[in-house]
Image (cartoon, rainbow, N blue to C red; front, top):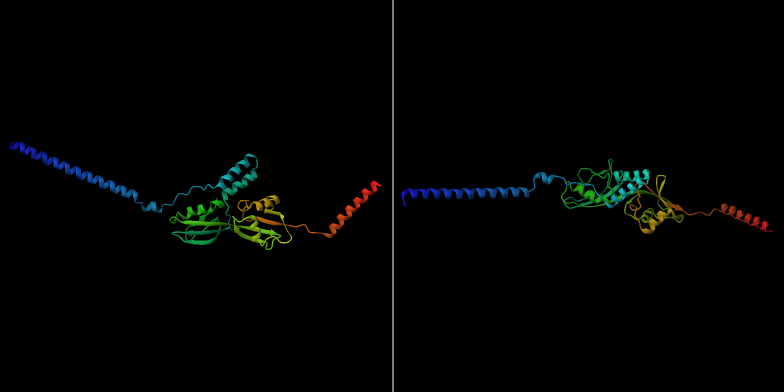
Length: 272
């Protein structure tokens, strides 16, 4: 081998080794950058951790039922009744003055009975106010879980809606009571001491203002079927009125007896 050939071979080998080393360094750098990017993608940023969870519209079975009822009433030309259903959907089942029992466990521990304040809001612990506008009773727990979950990790929430109603008429302790919305209609009457000796349960009705929302027959069916206040649509401010037995009036009895006797005498005279 000549000196020129040896020099060419030596230079070629050096270049080859340099290329191999460069390629190796480039591959290592690429792998390192890829691994770093992957690690960064898996590690949540401060913004991601603090970002609140999305809060989509609740779709309970009751909401679907009310929307269907409103559409049916509108199609039947009953615009007034449809507007009332639409109003309930918009405002929800939690007017100002009602109360809810809220129990939270997990990273936040909280238990209290909260009054719904102006704007239909409540305050849980030291969290920002939570609006209950547009929330129906079956949606309460899920709604609170979502809202509290915006600030607290994985809260476990239990809640109970209380509805303030009047129980009047022939009951032992008439008055206003805050009762669970899922209490039976019959138990709600017992909550006020139960019917007195003068009561006629067959004459019991439910009123909203001057409007009778449940007549005698509907109340009897609800009691017989074990329906709750929520199931029969009782709302805050409604009045459960327990009817009175027909009392014996001696004067009225004499008048009726005299009328019957006169009729008998008149018929007898016609026969003669």
